[in-house]
Image (cartoon, rainbow, N blue to C red):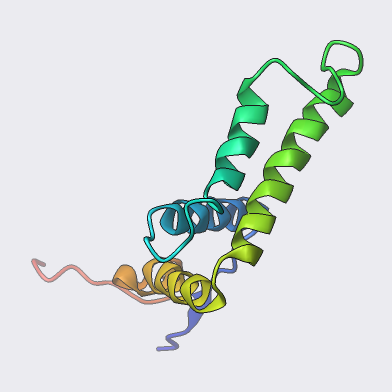
Length: 117
C-alpha cells in the first residue's frame, strides 16, 4: 500500500482571505496603534461613501478598480506599518489554523474496507 500526502497550496482567493483575517486580527490587537487602525477604516469608508477618484458611472471597470486598489493599498500599508513582531505572531497563528486543524488541506490516498462483512 502506497500512502502519500498531497498538500494543497492556496491560490489568490486563499491569500485574500488570509489578508482579510490578518487585518481583522491586527485591528483587534491592543499592541497596534489606534491611529494606525484608522487606515483600514478609511479604506472601507472610501468604498462605502459616494465620493470616488474615478466615478464608476463614467468608466465602470476603472471605477471598480480604483475601489479595489484603495482597499488593497490601505490593507497593505496597514500591515506594513504594524509592529513586525505582532504581524509575525498573527501570521504564524493563521498558518497554524489553516494547516494544523485536523490536517486541513491535506489529501491522503488510502484504501478502505468494510469491517462488518
